[in-house]
Length: 435
Image (cartoon, rainbow, N blue to C red; front, side):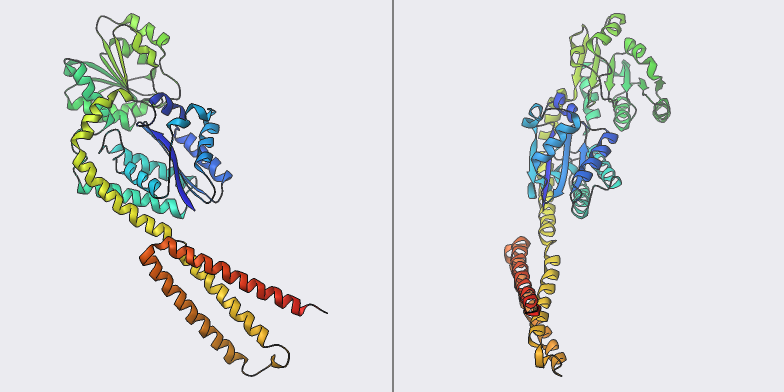
């Protein structure tokens, strides 16, 4: 059995590729159900965020190529369009990757708090669709514990460490007086809330939130004391806005260049700064070609995020030490998890060999011998002593060479014992057959 992850992220693929492979919650549930139906013995968890799409699998026979083909099939996208951007990790590397992701050490912004919530939500969805099992259940709980330990034992989460925070920081750099700007926040989910918080933190007071669900928009507006407008009023709000930050969850562009040109034509003099941090994107990139419209995507925040990473190098290094310790502990468990069942199988085969020898001995005149019960007890004691010797040596090998080597030894003994007991069974059948 192996643990595999196949995916892409902000470091390997641009946003125009990531958005093509993105899954919303309903698509993720559908994908997990399809995978579990197709590979009923395997385990799956799918993580899809603005910066990454990753499919984790534990299986005997599902390969990275199978996962790539599934991405292609589900999104109706030729694999050659995205395969070069994928990374594939197995076993120790896959475990290290997940723990690094969950601890925000692989994030665009090291220390950002959103990723652990997204990983937990992805795991909850997998549990709800019953696509997880013993291995991934343990692995993801180790990832949660690792994240907590990294946040507790480093200062990696201090400062501005969220994509919404960096978006507002960029707006502050590009807009002379952000406190007097009219800001429109598109989307009232968790990301939208963070955008509002950061805008208020830098002194912006004229903030309007617009969301497809008016009720959710009203909740955010009440909570932060800002304005809220109906979704149908989005165009009108953008006519007067100075800054728009978008994070709405949609599958297609809210605005193309042509549709936004009509809004741009109605605007008075002055630039409109649009920061689109949604994946899939809310604005067609060509909107940036319109006069006085400046459009930035999530990938355009890279300069600010690189500054963040350099400032946190010491915390990142300390966090990776914690990750490495937890990877080793998990892999010890993973390699050893098959030893127990193998010992059980070995006991059964040894007992079967002993029983076969007893039956072979007590035939004919000896069939009703009074010593049969004593002999059975003696053979059982011999078998148990031999088992004890084997188990003791397996334990020694596990300590000196690792659980995987011990499992290989026990597996070899079990296979040989099966051959011996099968041979005895076959011989017995021939002896019992009428001549």
